[in-house]
Image (cartoon, rainbow, N blue to C red):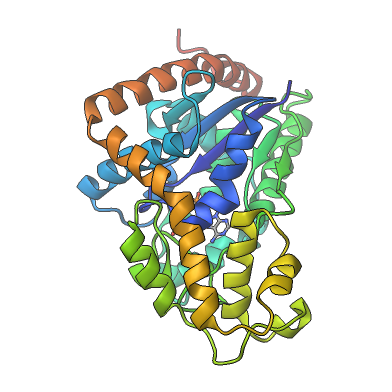
Length: 333
Ligand code: AQP
């Protein structure tokens, strides 16, 4: 059975984009796979995080993914920093990955922006840590959004180079599980930028913990245009905000954007937005309620994460020790 690894950064409250692009697919994978779900706090600190905010966000992320349907009894849910094998393997991968490979990573270019010199070294080597996250468990299936495809390719380059350099087929080939139906959800303020939990504007996103009033208000204020919805998808090409809202409705109702247009063609946003808001609110209502319930007992939440980490470490430790032996590092014990 393929082992699944997936991570999510506690860099804010999870958004509808994280849900439709990632968490919902994790839930679906649970039935047929052994899964590790990781709150990747070491990735989050590649950009500044307020320490108490990070603690809160780590718990909130764990609570949210459980509220979405991840089962920590059948699978493993933990926070990355509690399993030192991630950071230890990442160092070895820092020595395997080539600068030229990292220089091509578009996420670094996007996140470092114009002031690249001021970006952290951690942000630059982020893909090496991501490769370690996956390969520390010899996981072979990684459910991610389309934006992460390049990082999975890099992880495979690292694995192959390691296997070649040390003369053993030790790390397996990783496959990115990118669901065809998972639309990339874009910002509510700018249809050309992805919806992000770290966007400074709360109005740009739907948080999984937003209540119905906030959802209705955010969707009412979402940027659109005065034209009614067209009959074909091609006519939405130059209308990224409208395209995004149609895509969200389609993803939530498990329909195609074409189906949505067939239903709403000719109607303006005065009619479409309330229908969309209702659909989003319906989906998020039970998730929000369960997240709040879990967040009310942080002692239990922390204990659950630590127990998950112990189970994760039991898989990763032997793989790390073998990696170290292949590299020629003397055993610690
Ligand atoms: N807008 C999105 N649409 C579809 N999928 C998305 N994902 C993120 N945003 C969208 C998917 O969510 C998973 C976890 O993402 P992450 O938290 O590890 O990092 P990210 O992709 O950088 O997500 P954010 O919300 O934009 O975080 P910040 O603001 O910290 O950068 C990934 O599988 C991703 O594809």
